[in-house]
Image (tube, rainbow, N blue to C red):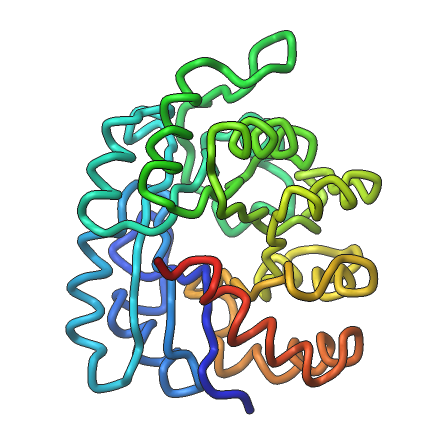
Length: 278
C-alpha cells in the first residue's frame, strides 16, 4: 500500500489491557505492512526503556521505535521529575492523562471506552475551578519545552486541550498533538479548529477510535483542517480488535476519499515523523 509509514500510537504487551503480542511482536507486524517509524504508548507509564529494547529486536524489520510517558496516576500525574527522566532517557512524547483524565473517568462505562474496561486509575485533574491550568502542570510544560518533546493531549476534552496548548505555547513548547479528536467523550468543537491550527496543533487520525465511534470518522477532519497538521496514530494493538494489516486498507481508502492520495500518503509518512523526530 504505502511504505515509510509513521505510526504515532502503537500498543503492545506487557499491559493491563490484553494486546495482540509483546511490543516487539506488534511492532514487527507493523513493519511488515509498511511502518518504519513507530511511537510506543502505554497507559501504565513510560515506554521509553521498552522502546529501546523493542527497537533493537526490530532492526531487521527496519522499524525505528521511540517511546514516551503517559502522566496518569500510576506515575504521579503532574510529575515533572518523571517527565524529566523519560526525556533524558530518550522519550519523545509526553501524554497528558488518559485513563486518569476527568473526561475518561466520567465516561468510563460508555461503549466507546469498552476497550479499557478493567483498567481504572485515580482521577488526575488538569484544570483548576477557574478553568486555568493547575500550577503543577506548568513544571511539566517546562520540561517538555526544554527537551523539545511532543506534548500530547491524552484524554483531555477539546476545550481542556485548548487551555493546555495555549499555556504550552507560552512556555515554549513547539510540538503539539491532539489525540483522537473525534471520539465523542472528548467533545470535539469545530469552532476551536481555527485556533488549534494557528497554534500549530497536529490532529491525530486513528483507526481504533474510528472503529469505536459511531459518528464521523477522524478522516473527515481533512475536509476543513490543514492537511499538513494531520498525522497518523493507529491506536492499534488491542487483542480484540483488528491488526494494522487487517484494518489499514479500508481506513486508508476512506482517508484518500477525503483528502486525495497524495495528501493521504503525506499524512501517513511525513507529518507524524516530522512532529516527533528530534
